[in-house]
Image 1 (cartoon, rainbow, N blue to C red):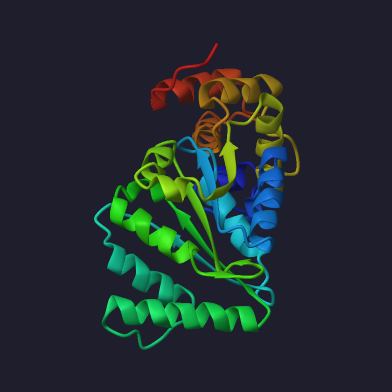
Image 2: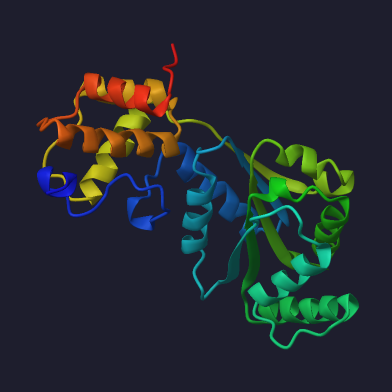
Amino acid sequence: MDYLEYYKLREHPFSNVVDSRFYYSSSQHSNAIVKLKHAIDARRGLSVVIGDIGAGKTTLARRLLEELEESAYEAALLVIIHSSVSSDWLLRKFAIQLGIRDLRESKVDVLGQLYARLYEIYEQGKTAVVLMDEVQMLKSREIMEEFRGLLNMELPEGKMINLIFFGLSDLEDVLSLDEPLKQRVSMRVRLTAFSEEDTRQYILHRLGVAGAEEELFSSDAISSVYRFSKGLPRLINTICDNALLEGFLFKAGKIDGRIIDAVAIDLGLTAEG
């Protein structure tokens, strides 16, 4: 027996793997989606989402991508996994993500192919969108200039391509490498930590999706989760997953504040306030 069987859950409710079924639409996440879709539909060009580690930027990016219907948008998500990316590699990646095959060798030719593809997307009545996660890793003036060049491709209705950057607060410094690009940011969204009430609703939502038939966390447990996680979704998941395991090992019927305190000590977390 494991904690899933013990607590009568169908699946793990607090995995940090992004899964749209567990998406919790807090008011700030809902507002962010509305603002970003407005910027996209108005062909504003560049929008930026900034948040601390574990604040839910990647989850928001995946959710936004899912809401951009294929019939109206040509959309792709690109995750930057290392900082040693060249502008040529990035340009070619953009082209592939937007559906271009048989890429030519020279950068000038690829730009030509990209322009032709963006115009084709426009002629199809669609809007081109590329979402980029972890953009703060691209600490290159050359790459920022490349983005600016892409945003210079325009139609009477607006930009031919919309770029949505997701990143940590360092992203502002990266944008500052090319001041004209920074001035082109049409929408800024900042994700903050959950409130205690959002933390409670988030926990209950994820447990419900996983099949919980009763409340498994007491009120004082949820308050403790909030204090130790500081309202960051990734930490909430980590604490709650460990708490369910701890509760199973001690055959606790419900997770209480003492279990959360014990888990926090094991994880090396300190409470706020």
